[in-house]
Every structure is written in structure tokens, then in C-alpha cells.
Amino acid sequence: MSNTPHELHEEFPQDADRIHALKTSDAHFAKLVEGYHEVNRAVHRMETNIEAVADAVLEDFKKQRLELKDKIASALAKLA
Image 1: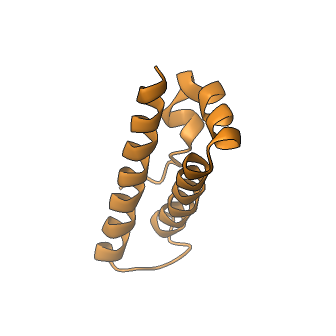
Image 2: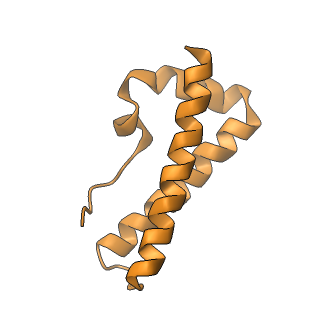
Image 3: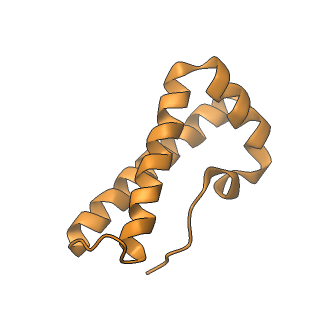
């Protein structure tokens, strides 16, 4: 189990400027990013045992995080 935060600037280091630009110009993208941050923070709290949860709950949150990351990657790819 990893308890390393998966921040977007670490996941997409080459896209930091595009992420910022899209967050300010695209409300849907901004909502995806905010959702990612919320789920990512929740996963981090669960992995570090700040919030004790069943393994199935943690896995569901990780799946949500991955789905949001995929949507963010897809939006970034459309701009490439």
C-alpha cells in the first residue's frame, strides 16, 4: 500500500501550465481537478490511517481517483 500523495503536478509535471490554464478557462475541467484533489486527499487520509475504513472503501476511492485522472489526461491530450 502506498501512502505517497498523488498530486496532479507530480502526475503531470510537463502539463502544469496547461492544467492551470484549463482550470481558469474551462469550468468542467476545473470541476474534474477539484474532484481529483478531494478524492486524492481522502485516499491519502485512509492510507495513512487518519481515517480508518474497510479495504473495499479504500479501493473504491482509488478507482474514483483513477477515473478522474484518466478524464484529466484525456482533456490534456485533446490540447496536445
